[in-house]
Length: 358
Image 1 (tube, rainbow, N blue to C red):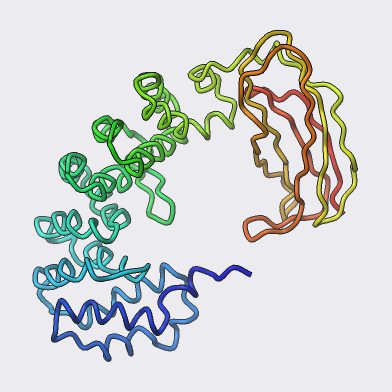
Image 2: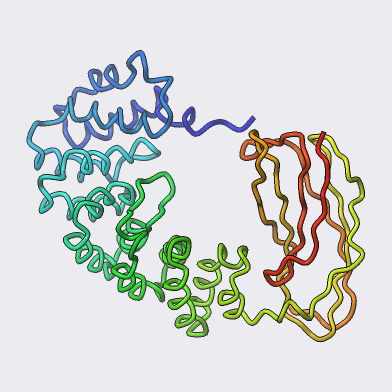
């Protein structure tokens, strides 16, 4: 079984290494006291993010009471810390620096060069976006690519593992100048963050995201890649504007025939095998997908889309056979009941069938 993240970090060795890095920046740091505070009776039962926050609280008990002095210590320690433990540094600023923005915001811009501050900037954005966004626009022009990435990643409306930003979920337009600044960034890591930000926007404001994608598509290979990644959710949902950006053919001209389930009744752990033929009257650009509508614990169905292929095809018949595992995974548990499988061609459901999981 794969090792859990919560067990990979905040071990005795990694906390000791982290404390030593703090001590390098602040020789008076009481490493033993900090370690003792971290490993209290409740520590092992905490999840990863709770462990990180707990370590931040322990830092607060063992660093100077002066916030400005502690921030300087954290800035000097940042190049020497590694692992998830390092997130405690920017987290300290988000917990204790909300009353001193003139110190906190530049500090996050510095620390993110070594330890990402994408989580820590969000409470500031949530409280006063008009005050933070000029800093982020300036970061988008910074020489260091980690700082430029913070400008995009930190303001994602739906950043995983982070607090949401409801103001930007409602109206993401203030973020667009930052994304415009970064769309041709020389760093692929930064451009991927721009794509993820646009994908977040598409979930709450698809029209705004599509306006941007239509404008950017065709400008360069880099912007085309951003647009494709940003539209991944809309493409899976069969959004017609998203499909049109990439020139997918009219699904009315694409026919699915001879769909067959090898076994309509299976056990958890079996493979679902199916085959079908796609009939094309003309040369077509095709995005071919299938969806499994899984039965959940309470009996409701939950749809998950899987891509088969996307390509240009000649006119004629094209046959496919696929195998889909119904084995339990860490990210998906299967339940008995009547499941559904659907085939989608360029966003349009062409055929559906049922199978029983016993």
